Length: 326
Image (cartoon, rainbow, N blue to C red; front, side):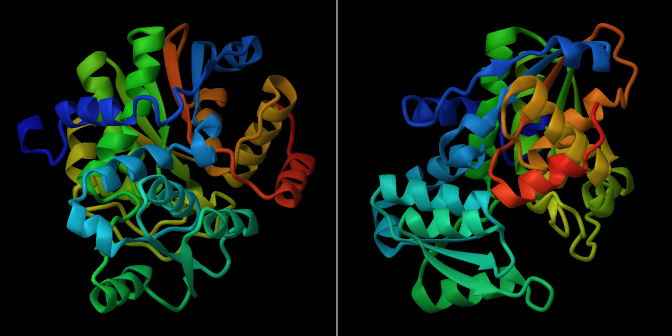
């Protein structure tokens, strides 16, 4: 079945070569308290320390680097609620390519500011009234730009998979790998790397209770479209997984679980108090499930991808103040 997938491990390995010396090889952290809560050996791959503060830099840089000279000269366009926007803006600047980013008007202020700060043109839209893909398609047609979407793109998926590749190379084979799920690009790439490097590893996705489109899609076997989810995990406020993504989930992912916003707040507080790191709500998805013992781990070796750390200071303060301690 793997031969029919849009992305292979060879693509992930090639992406790793392109990203070597450009993307950060982010740290893997552990916590005695996390191990106690999970009843497992837990290894956190901290993509909150990646360039632009999230894993998205991997896929963005890899995808732009694969464009032809003619495509680079015309420029690129992306749509994103924040992290892919920042990643595309920085990657484009590093590769001397003009970037245009379509972002929702209610995207976190720090993500809007950072995207503009990296030199990209930002075009705002209303996510409750407009379809971002339609907005992007119109601009691509008008300007002749190359579209690089946040998750449903083979070079983006391959780039994201390098995070799991690095994790397993550092800590060895895992029994479980927990990955945050929005549109599914990260879990797609990571599942491909995991199945190659640790064939017995069970890959588990985690998304917000309010936005379980990936869970429903995996279980039904077809892409399920939902309204914009009401969740603090802004990076997972997606309405459906990608067309390239679903077959990869079906081939490589054991299950997709959900967690509540309250669990995300408590996990943010745990990271701040116990591990002294800032993690955004979306970045806490996988960890929240693990720390709640969503599965009977009993001493298993568990990897968790922390996807990012980009959260407004005021929102971060509100979340950890309202959170119940773990």
